[in-house]
Image (tube, rainbow, N blue to C red; front, top):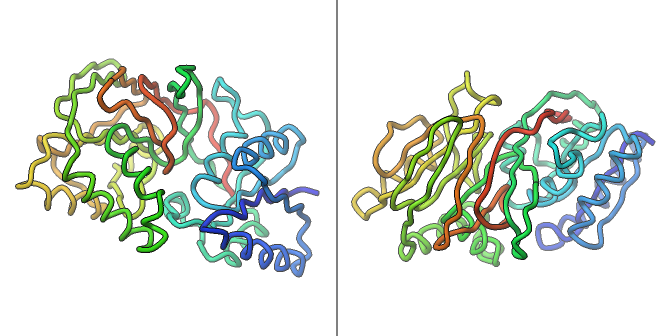
Length: 308
């Protein structure tokens, strides 16, 4: 058996479980050699991935949403940022916000995604390593594939994940959540160190540290092609006022290059540290609130082999 399919049947309000049965029958009909494993708890995504890596499984496939993808990816790495095996990673998406799939042109239709898994073509992709503090003030290290957010991004993830997307859809639900938060959200100051430079950024709404074009639920960013995969982008949203709100929203949803302003600017770096902040300390990555500042972000030592 060369492939294990780690299935989150609870993703997308339980629709993932129904899709999983269709995919299993489809792969069986194609005479594909695999083992389906259904999780019972969300944390099983990580433990099953780690076990499969250590067992020498060739292909480890995540079936679920962005949270499932993130947990399974974390099972590929040790605390030092090294892969623990030569296993390859794949996705059959059944979630609500396919940012990872959009970034790497992975089909979001389950049968087309299954065909990609069967063909087993691969490419190497960069993965971010982030160290932060959990609720018990213990430092932990995790990995992300798309983007980490400090500030408003964590509040947005909490609100959008709380149920509004269930009724309004991913993009619309997230957009309305963003507007509701922006009305009341007050900026704060952060000390940011990136590569050899330290900067105090005042009245910050959000800091996005990312790898891929797609940040979350329709929000996207134009990356300089020559820097993609080698540098993180650091998007700084600050000094947001009613007079520049429309321009701000248009730019973060357009995916086009924009000029730096006092309310929206971008830098590039290979390593980023953000110091402790008591007013807005929350850290979020790949769609889920995860911990607290201070945090340190750099690339994992090994790239991930993605089936695409």
